[in-house]
Image (tube, rainbow, N blue to C red; front, side, top):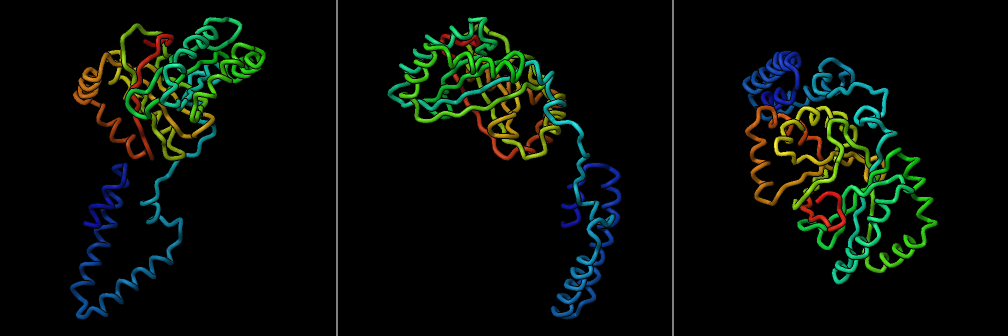
Length: 303
């Protein structure tokens, strides 16, 4: 059982063959020791002797290398390897937890102010979408902004909005309605399409994944192949990864006609050759994941 468990952990055929040979010898040694030992004391003595001799092995021995997952050193930041162009688009996602009794007033306030910023060419930013969470965190608003030109565009917008009296009044009034808020700065994956306005009605699912540190490149490699299995019904809206805020965070945004359509579309993906591999190899990279079903506000370009 031990041998089968260890061999199953290897990823290449070469490692499997080498490990199989070594582990078979080790396991036969265990069997011989068990048969040759006439007392419990002898058996324990043999195991302790084996453990003690194993600890004397060098840490970089060839035997240990069978069990150590090696990661190739990278010379580039993952943001440069995974995005189209770091200077092209920067995204900001905002999560606002609203006082339950204030949600309607909050929505109206946003619908009055946010579209004016979106439409004003003076600000190099666009409102990609604005929603209320339907299933997930209740009484929550989610806003997604795009800054064409990256960090300089973000800085320009922030400086200009500080001089905008209407926006200052909006922030002051909004603050009275919120319980908490947080945001993240994101880049888009190169293999996802850029989010564009959609006609409705649709519901949207935001699936958020907290990855294990150091696994973003691996995630991108598998999803670059797997995304083609999730575009048959044009449900893929956008894919992003965090740069500031919660790190090693991935967000996938999907659109469906309704919950039944979501169920049928997701089930259909499993009938396509290759989709199960994308899931099989990416699930171990995840530390935590959550799903939100969201309803767009009237002012949202994504309907």
